[in-house]
Length: 264
Ligand code: GLU
Image: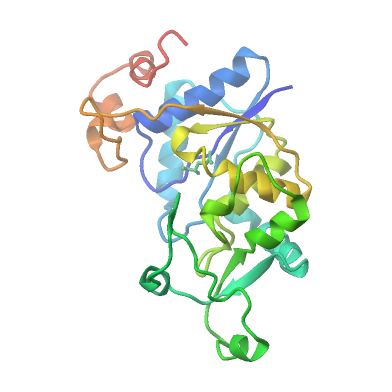
């Protein structure tokens, strides 16, 4: 049975672009008699707000989108993400990193990857003495991608352009890549649907799935909705907000059509 999900981060109100993502996943599941899940990806505790979670849920209901089972809230599962990181670290596949963003950007040779400057590997092989010099300081966990590939062998999608991605952040538990793949596995998601801008990240997700023994789901990528001038829809732009359209008196059928799903 097909299981899809919508996994918004509550950093703002639902807009037409996120409604498109939700409707894409929901119609895939419903058309096939499958299950559709809702997950709130709120591990970025500095940017996510509970009031946005409430608003997203209310706007989805208003749009006529229903989900199966309980809503999964990522911040309720921090211990599980920590356990996955410990597992990888215990196998020598993850290491502690004390670098700041400025340290990485200042590194002249850092090439640019899909997510910004590629981590130059400064903390990858720090001696025990060098590590203890950082005692008490906050650190991130990074995946040692080369070491990981020695375990899995080459993959159809090459994760190396990302460099050693963060799997546990300094100030938040886990990271997007770790938590999204962990949760898709534990929730039994069989088809991951997301916008094309996240397609490249599949390389990292597949690597984590193979390392952790998690099933590799099918993937489908949908377009990103844009403004008439071609620019990306922004959460802060009221004109494309579901809440604002509703307050203007639009019906949910009209808004579904504006999000690219007329007649569903
Ligand atoms: N939580 C992610 C976001 O809001 C999307 C989850 C995913 O499909 O990867 O952008």
